[in-house]
Image 1 (cartoon, rainbow, N blue to C red):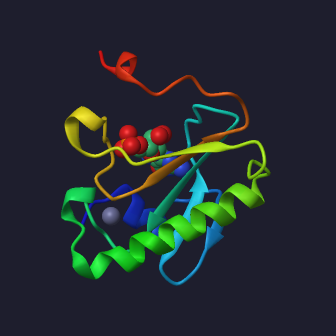
Image 2 (cartoon, rainbow, N blue to C red):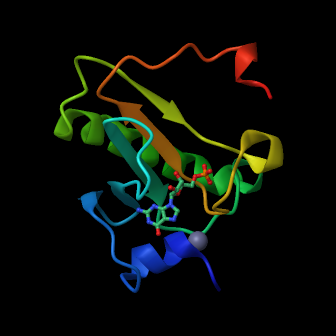
Length: 117
Ligand code: 5GP
Ligand code: ZN
């Protein structure tokens, strides 16, 4: 399967890792959009949030748990951050392996209808 994030999990594409356990991996985004821009992913290949089934919700919970640890590790726990999952075409998803962006390290703009193009 040709998935960039599966390759990062396997280690055939390098990444700057922040956190790893049996089910979850977190690493720095290659094109950061904020001073802190991490990606948190389940190691299991699930293309989009639409594809997560009942057996996956505990895993998605683990991804959120890891995001909390990453925020602490990167020093934005106190100042705050945004955790985003892009799903599908209108969501702007480019890599079809579920991931959460953790953005912080500065004040982010409001997330509202003006986000629409
Ligand atoms: P999406 O638009 O699918 O939500 O976000 C995909 C993200 O993955 C983008 O922010 C992009 O910069 C990041 N990305 C794509 N390829 C790589 C890569 O090879 N390594 C890392 N660390 N990030 C990547
Ligand atoms: Zn994958």
